[in-house]
Length: 84
Image (cartoon, rainbow, N blue to C red; front, side):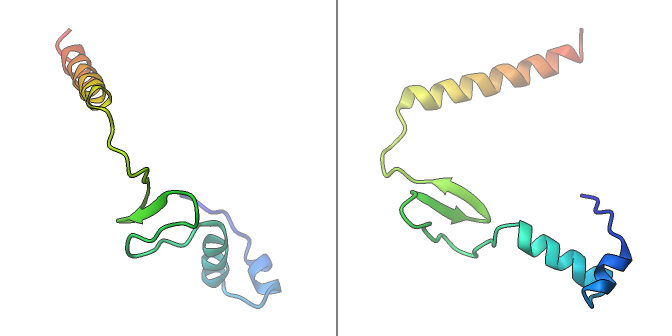
């Protein structure tokens, strides 16, 4: 990520450019929690810095098989394109 900041904006707020940039990033990015913590009423939990939707219902085997098939098919196409 590249941020183009003018130092006069930071100075006008009484901050160094580094502190101003940190303040901007902290304001715009969500806070990452360290462990699985549910987000109120949404079914979302944070695991290893990623949001995961928990339904408490297992995925159907067909959905998993389809995802694996598509992944393998995509990988095969990428590999075979290199030999065409």
